[in-house]
Length: 127
Image (cartoon, rainbow, N blue to C red; front, side):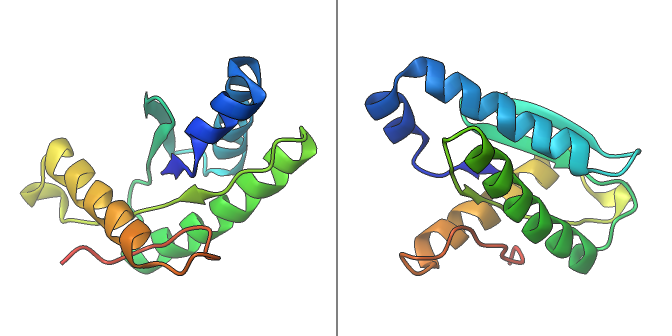
């Protein structure tokens, strides 16, 4: 998951506002996940969420719910942002963490490239 147009927040509202957005996104992800889920900030405006034992369709639904929750949380602090989400599932025995992350990242960027201008995010099955 990454924060859409995050650079604009930093450039127009300042780094303090950007930090506030990142904290709000992290809080939204932690509070909305299941007990077994793991949330991590993996870079600048990028977050990853590990959803153990979660089928792709469920991960897609969770991603859409998380997206809406992030929008609501960041609106509460006066810095509404959208996020783009990519989801990937693979059998435990056949995938490394790097492979799974790369597949989800590819889905996220494929969604960014193909979505309409008014869409806030996309979930794409990796192909």
